[in-house]
Structure formats: structure tokens, C-alpha cells
Image 1: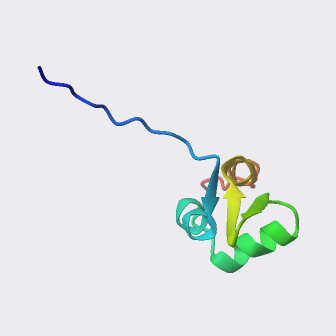
Image 2: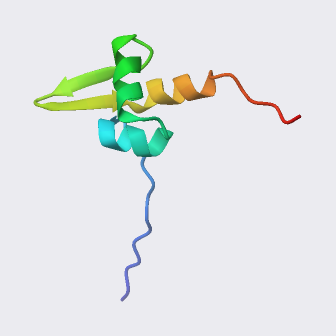
Length: 69
């Protein structure tokens, strides 16, 4: 009998600053600035700072859109 496991994509509730930089395309300094301004939510777990995925998605979806000329 063969058991095949399929990959399940799970959306993380939060991500590290490094992952937020990779995922969003924003710089590390900009991520920290947005956290400081309260535009992106972050939590501290031990020594790690985690950015909530929902707040980063909200920020990017509400950003002004560029239109082709």
C-alpha cells in the first residue's frame, strides 16, 4: 500500500522581519518604520519580532495603484 502526502499551503499568521522583507519587497528599515507608525502590526515573542500577515496584506492592498500610461 502506498500513501501519498500532498503539500498543504498554510498561510502563516505572522512572519519574521526577514520574511516580511522577502514577502513584501519592502526594506527592513521601512518595515520597522511602518511598525513604529502603527501601520503594520507586530508582536514580540521572546526576542523575536513577528509581523502579522494580515496587517502587511492590508497595507499593500490599500497602497496607491500605478496605472499604465
